[in-house]
Image: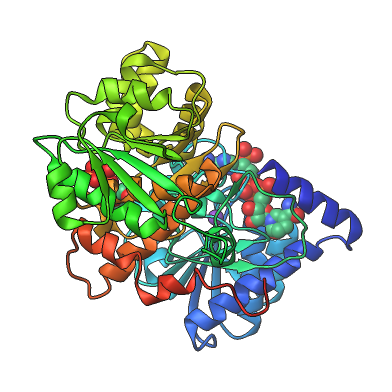
Length: 478
Ligand SMILES: NC(=O)C1=CN([C@@H]2O[C@H](COP(=O)(O)OP(=O)(O)OC[C@H]3O[C@@H](n4cnc5c(N)ncnc54)[C@H](OP(=O)(O)O)[C@@H]3O)[C@@H](O)[C@H]2O)[C@@H](O)CC1
Ligand SMILES: Nc1ncnc2c1ncn2[C@@H]1O[C@H](COP(=O)(O)OP(=O)(O)O)[C@@H](O)[C@H]1O
Ligand SMILES: [K+]
């Protein structure tokens, strides 16, 4: 959020005073007008905190009052309210109220309690609104009050919004759970600030198009990438089949499978080269995927993969083994933990007791970054919002996905897909973010009818027509 403040300060220095706030308020009022349909005669409540976030809300309230809305403002700290905003509201016919029943009576509530300047959990005078019954639409100004704009963490209570209108840039807290689940539909209002590349970004379709490998006339199966999959065990042969299914859809030219589920794999996918003589005898690969359904024998396999001199993706049982070893030097590593595995990895690296997995889920960016730093690895943290952190400090939030992906084996598909992109030569950070993007889209496609999906449905959907389009360069070459 420091970057947002710096960009706002730079823009403010160029522009007449109050310009940015006026742009924000006009954009906000326009969205509210569309949500209300008929502004004239509607009841609007402005919840105004003591900072500029409250100022935005009051100016927008004034604009709605000028269009005939009955606007009331509830001031959280009346003695420190944004004076210009309140004067504008009053001049437009709005009034101050201290009647909290307005909250439930309003057609639309503007949450201008606190924006990017929020510190700690909502204070008691504000927290009460979080649990209050409502009838109308709640519109968060810039960020739902109580959500930490920079991280998506929620310390205590937060106001749940139906719509969030944010200014200048999407704040990470609107994209990363748990914050994202408070934001509702997010609208961006451009206010004319120029931001440097953000510390947290999300891949757009055009980025995925640019990154996805497409074979050309020079290609052969080896140049397209050979991925080695060491997965599955007597207890979990299916994990081998599912990782291979994911890898086949990722675009590698050849897949080598090592492990005890070779017969199952070939029965399902005759194109796979299999070996049960161990990883060292498998032949050359450009990446290894180690761990899905790996069972007890995975430790030795992991050590061999780490010494193979190619990028190694470690998942599932492989992560449990890695946590036992702690950070290892020398290999290019991608780790794909869910929060339970992340807890074990943190414990393995710090020598402390594993932290509570729920707490890690509530601070996803911080968790992924910390693991990336501790292990010197690219970390893809799975769950309701997938985040990818690189040891160089970059972070991406995955914009696709669906809760239907929370089905047994879908993580195995992701591991194979990601391994395939690594073998094709994508840098670990790109491979992980593109894999999460495709996996999330495939999950959405498979779940289009709103009925449960299987992990194999997800693998199959990676190649559906719409996703195939991502591999066709656009005509304009962009
Ligand atoms: N800068 C610009 O050009 C533009 C900025 N814009 C807008 O300004 C917003 C940022 O405004 P800001 O910096 O004034 O901070 P803001 O979010 O209102 O919060 C500070 C106030 O909240 C209070 N407070 C803090 N924590 C709290 C808590 N837990 N629970 C309750 N209260 C809490 C804190 O009180 P204090 O700690 O001082 O007692 C202080 O008074 C930004 O999000 C966007 O909407 C747009 O207009 C575009 C142009
Ligand atoms: N609530 C959720 N919303 C969206 N995606 C989810 C949710 N829960 C899990 N996922 C996704 O489902 C997949 C599950 O992977 P994983 O936990 O490894 O399961 P498994 O080991 O059974 O394959 C991951 O891609 C994860 O990001
Ligand atoms: K707010």
